Each structure stands twice: as C-alpha cells, then as structure tokens.
Length: 442
Image (cartoon, rainbow, N blue to C red; front, side, top):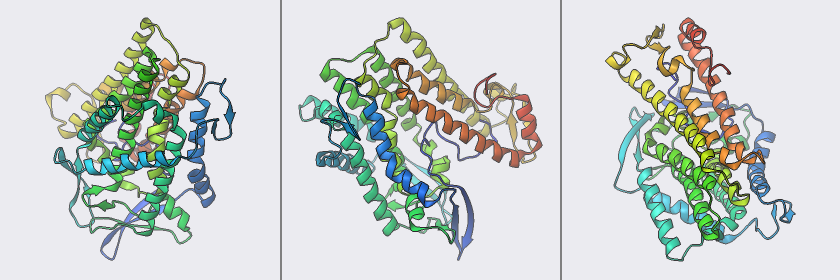
C-alpha cells in the first residue's frame, strides 16, 4: 500500500465480514451530514443471510467433528442447539467488556470528523481489557469454577446465543436509534424496506455513554471474543490431555495476530467499515458469531481431529508465519513513515511517481514488489496457521480462503479509487509493478 491508497483500508483482516453495502454518498440536509446508502442486495438476499449465517456456521463446526460420531440435522447427537446457560455466558462476556471499556487506562484517540465539526474520540484500552479478561478466565479455571471442556461442549448453543443477543441488540438499536450531534444521518432510497434498514443499519456512530457501539462490537466482542475461544480450546486440550504441537502452533499464531491488532487498536478507526458504513444487524451478528467462532475454526478442527506433526515440519510453518508477519509489519511501517514525512532520508533511495493529486506514489521498496504487500503478509500468516491441520479436509482452510477473497476484493476497490484519483500516474505505477498480491502470480 502506498500514500495514495484510501484511508478506509482494512487493518489486516479486520473487515472479514461483508455488510453488503453498495455505494455510500455523503451530503448535507438541514445543516447535517447525510450518508445515502444504496444497497446491491434485495430483501430476499438479506433475509437469507440473516437467517442462514448462524445455521451455516453450526454446520461447519459440526462437520469438524469425527465422522464416527452420530449426526443429526443442525448438530451432532447430544450437543444442544439452545441452552440458557450459554445465553448467560455470552451476556456476561458482553457486560464484562462494557465495564472494562471504562478502565481509566489507555489513550483517547481522535477519529473521523463528526457533523459538529469536532473529531470523534475513542477509548483505546482494548489491550488492557483483553489482559484482564485472560486473567479472569485463568482464575476461574484454576479455581475450579470453570471447566473449559464444558464450554466447548456448548459450542452450538453459544452460537445460537450469540445470534439471539445480536438480534435483540440490533432491534434496540433499530427501534431506538442513538443519535448524537456528531453522528451523520443515514438515509435510504424510497424503495428501501424496513428489513434493509434493520440489516444494514441506520446509525453511523451510536454511543452509549462513552462507549462507541461500533468500536465496541468490532474490537471487544469480535477480536477479544476470538481470543477467548482460542484460549478456551487450549484449556480444553489440557483437560483432555491431548494437546499437540500443531494445536499450539495455531493458537500461538492466532494470539500473536490478535495481540498485534490490539496493540495497534487505533488502526481500526480508519477502516472502511468504521468510517463509511452504518452499524446494523449483519455487522453486529458477524462480530458476535462469525469472528469468534469461524476465525477459530482451525483450532476447533484440531481438537476434534488431532493431527501430529514432526518438529522439523513445524520449522517451515513458523518461517512462513514469521515472513508473513514481517512483510505485513515492515510494509506498513514504510507506508506510514513515507506518508508522514516523504523527505525523510530513510526514503531517499526509494523511487516515486508524482501524482496529479499532489502526492507521490512509491514504486520501489515493498511497494515495488507487489502493490498490496500488507495484504500478502495477511494471506501468508493465515495459511501458516492452517497448515498444522494437515490436508485431510478443506474445513480449516475456509477462513484463510475467505480472507484471500475479501482482501482481493478490497484491493480491487482501492485500485479503482486510486485510478480515479491519480489517473495516468496510477497506470504507470501498475505498469512498473504489475502484480497485486502474489509476485509473478497475481
């Protein structure tokens, strides 16, 4: 990525869910900022997505289980689809994260400009909330209050509980929209049905006290929830005494990925989902069930179908993850540094193309290799934590394949925008750097 790319880029695979928004246009109405949403999806598509996302996830989790176990529609025999204790677990986790949002630690960062001419402010203490949540989990486990295996046995009911709470959360937000002086007014065209507004949302930046709801569900529910599922799976393996090197590799890789995101939590404030899209049922549902349960699918797969790998096999897998992480980190460092100070001596040897928009496009360094090296780093890391699962099934590779598809789509969106902005300079850049994501391949 270069200085020319849009501010609403993805942070790693932070935007794994596609809310289905089409074009969004900004304007003013009665002195207030207006966001006009044009959806490409009709009510049938949205209804199917809302209803079947959780069902599809449960079926994926069920397919991970051993083929020798008895199976029934929407779940293996003996595993409940609904359980009130699971509802309590999801509610307690949500309330805990709301309380931890008020921790008097972490910096307050400024985000996008609000309608009142002031920058929106966000409390960035996700890392501290995560660490305290981990400590609480371990205290409960060591104290015998929590049995990790019992939580995993309720995996299907946890998904349905997340669906129910997402539905209630979204209904409250839809029926009682929270609007502040800084929030943009979201409008739809005259043909839009209530289901469309409910699914995609009619609030841009709703706040509950100091809690920005969009930031809360993206970071605290989605990413910290993902980490908690990984840790619970790890504790389950300890209880079952079937932990393995392959399981440890996947969990460690994913926790490094999540920790890096939480350390750089402010990067989510510039993503497209955060700055341009309203928050509705699809976004909330994705953060409550898709990010925590689908992203941790390779770990769950290994618990159900253990796969032993030799130490020597782990070495190239670790190297692949490390290379991916370095490509992601160093390319972003180069992009951010060049954006802040193009005249820094550290970038004196880098070749650039002057754009009619007034900025310069990097055509050497990481961005002379491929046009989106940070996305390449993402893809390498995700495939690295799938490899310990072996090749007996495609299931543990589905999150990485989805990530590749979404990043490819996002790269195309960014390039269309850059072509409009930089015109001939962008065409020259593409001529000099012909590959988007994979050198000599794509």
